[in-house]
Amino acid sequence: MNGKMNTAYGEITIDTKVIAKYAGTTAVECFGIVGMAAVNVKDGFVQLLKRDSLAKGINIEIDEDNKITIDFHVIVAYGVGIHAVADNLITNVKYKVEEHTGMEIKKINIFVEDVRVID
Image (cartoon, rainbow, N blue to C red):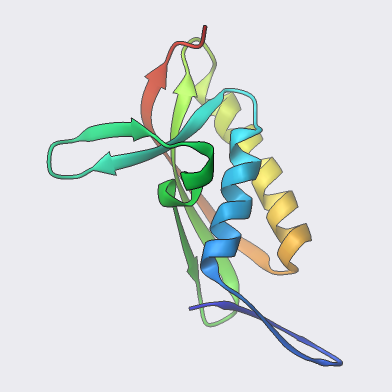
């Protein structure tokens, strides 16, 4: 389901792919996030996604009340506190996505798929 906003001039529809791309770009700018992860369920292989494929590591759901739930599959940097990284990610994404779309974030779920050492 796509997001919708009503204005004095008509209705605006926002595709979930647009929200996912914006959320992914915001996420990789956060401290401690190496990148988004694509998980191969069959063999459990985790792959770091390139910048132009960030939306593949994100699942967006919009409920009947037009509220967004975001699932992030991320790879974090080795040596940083996962709790601190998650709090930073949630705060930044919530603020920027709500500001960008005009829609409310209902829930953000973070799945840490891997830890990588950054050179």
